[in-house]
Length: 407
Length: 68
Image 1: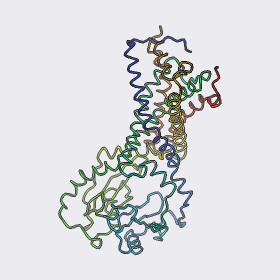
Image 2 (image 1 turned 30 degrees about the horizontal axis):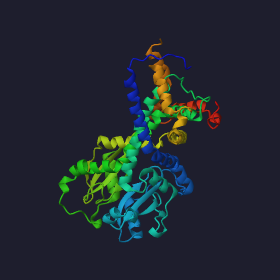
Image 3 (image 1 turned 90 degrees about the vertical axis):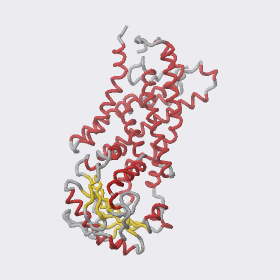
Image 4 (image 1 turned 90 degrees about the horizontal axis):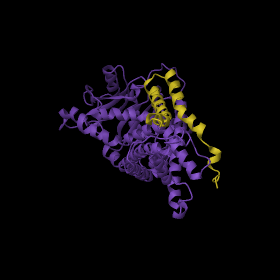
């Protein structure tokens, strides 16, 4: 299998120089991102099964009711939440379309919430009986949950927006490492049959072959998850951009007017009903009260989603005048937020049942082996004394061998 | 001399084929409405894993250098 001749037309020096540049790109993009990518891959593993783990740790208990049981009026639930947290403002409502629950969030004020997201409180209701299922614990009793810890390590390393952008940059370096790695794969394996792991040679050569093989086999998946991961890390600035352009233009006529007080607000249930009439094909799942970072000081901002596999991932935002309850606009989602919405399932792997999640986890494990073997190959090269290079097969020497043979 | 195209296809047909299968698997579950599309997705995305299982020389990797 080593004897097949390879036709090449490039001039000797040119190909070697290109290869060295690629090796430089592969080496440095990998060195910078590998530690963080290992954190991302390891914390991502339980996150694939976040829903299953959370159901296991906190089994949901719902009253046995027929599927057709009517939903409680949302205004009654809002009043219930206000009663439990007097003096706080209601910030948002989440009406789950998957389980019969309604989660109402509150905060001392919008300014407090912005300054410290942990000042947020919530009440979880059964949407059919109106009974309180769960309440947020007081700050002193709040503990870091396992999944919460995994998410922070995976997304921002507890560093907020700078952390998100940093991890996004690491994802892009990972993509650069994959692309340069594929070209290097082409050089390393030019004279090998696919899947060859040269067991008869040194341990380093075996791991190099395995690194190449596992890397190229999971190439498309790793690229997709890497690119969509970088995209997901941009969600904060992308939503801010949308807020400052499309949303700002939509609510411009209200500029300068006094925002409504909490007691002036129109019915929340009516806002959901108005939205449902305007978009009969969609399901409204959330409502943000006026004054938040996203939306308008004068409007309820509702998010609706479609009912098919794909459109269930695509949201249509709706603005409802919070004083009059009239529909102001169905907001068009710009292309970059659509791209973000498509990036979510392709990154999470949560769109094809449990088998897809298991496949996701296995591919994640393979990626961990690729990262680990890459680290091993690099560290091994550095540790080796110069005199030993001649006696043991080395990655660079291998490339040179191949090139010389080819030219 | 074997023409370049032949060695090129010998080298890249497996990686390319697996990449196409992966993309198909990723999209079929996303765009298709459950049922058969999920099964096709699971099947397509299992292929890279089968290739890994087929070629992974688990026992030999952790042996000391065999050629001395």
